[in-house]
Amino acid sequence: MANILVVEDEPEMVDILKLILEGAGHSVSLAHNGSECISMVEKGRFDLIMMDIRMPKINGWEALRKMKEGKLLNEAKIIMVTIEKGPGVEIFGLQDIVADYITKPFDKDDLLRIVKNVLKK
Image (cartoon, rainbow, N blue to C red; front, side):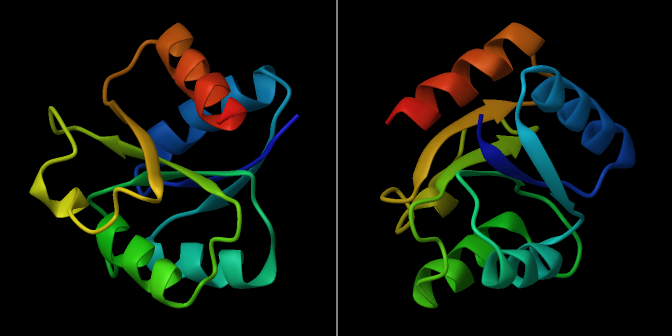
């Protein structure tokens, strides 16, 4: 299926996302902050990046901006993962690369539906 990079700093959430996504047949790589994400995207190619917004070192928005400026995203689709009720004003300027978002806590079926829909785009 898809090659997915999960970027999340909460170990429990990393485990949940990995379990759900691998259970659906996807290959999952992990990064624990924006810096690790950028480094991994420089070295590899991903179909989808699921990015937490609030992380140490470099947050999700800043990591996306850096990857966009460096033209590192190629064809990767982006889903933002947040505890906020919506993506907020920070999405301004990144609408062209953020395909969707999901709020924590999330339902497994909702997550898989969003992933499937984004990968189809």
